[in-house]
Length: 133
Image (cartoon, rainbow, N blue to C red; front, side):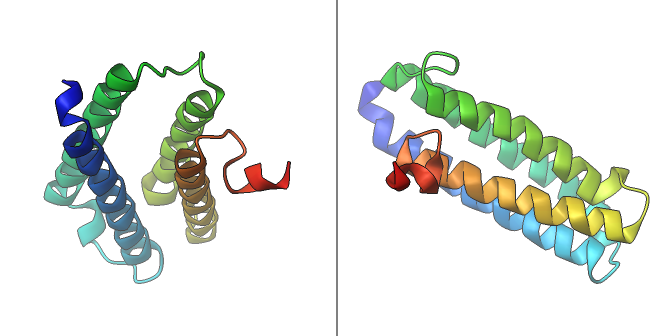
């Protein structure tokens, strides 16, 4: 499987960018424009499919490079932040009761997404703040 590392990494990165872009579009559509399409079943299923590809590629990469959450701090941070992002995203798109609350959760989810990105780029738990040490 090691011979496919670069291709799997590209799939993972593409899925991250696609997933984030779709979340951004759905959040903007729902929270700013009060559109119905972000909650349509086909849009949700596309999101689930992209996220499944993303997580599958992540597990494959983890196996190839032998770096695992709870053994490598940066992956532990990414995993914890992923759970936080999912919870915030759920509130941003459907669980929050008011539009203002949905917007707050949406903004928080985007910030967490960005931090996950920087942790991944730096391979350091502090992400973009790792250079301050």
